[in-house]
Length: 205
Image (cartoon, one colour):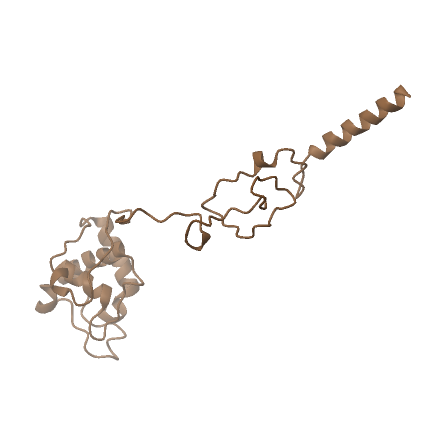
C-alpha cells in the first residue's frame, strides 16, 4: 500500500514539474499569473475587450487578465495627453510653425534657426533637387522641365527674389504662392529651413 502511494505521489510530482515547462507557443502553467501579467496600464498596448484572458484572470475586478484600457481617458487610451501649453520641439530645437498663410509680413522677421554649414547646404541641395528643381531648375534660373510648360516661374536670382528674407522664403515653401503649391505637408520644418539655406546660396551665384 505504501509503495503504491509512493509511486502515485511520484507521478503527481513528475506531472507538476512537467506542467511548469514552457516550449513553443505553450507558456506552461502559471501559478501566479499576476506576477507575469501586470495590471498597470501599458502605454504601448490597448486591449479594450474586457473578457480577453478571462480564463487566466484572478483580478479582483473580475475582468480578463489582458484587458488594459483606461476608461478614464478619452477613447480609453492608455497614453496621457501632454501638459497644457506643452510645445514639442524637433531634434534640432525648431518650434512648430504657427503663422497663417496671410502672415507674410511677420514671416519676413523670422530667422533661420540652422547654421550655414557644409552639411546643411549639402542636405539643402539634395532636398532642393528632390522638391524644387523640376520648376526652378538646377541653378534656380526657372529652367526646370515644368517651367518649360507652365510659364510664370521667376528666376531665383532676380532682384525681387534675391532680396527676400529667409523667413519669407520659408513661408512661401510652406504655403505656396500663385501657381506654386504648398509644401508644408510634404517637407518637415527642418528640411524647409535647409532648402532655404541652399536657395539663398543659389541666389548669390
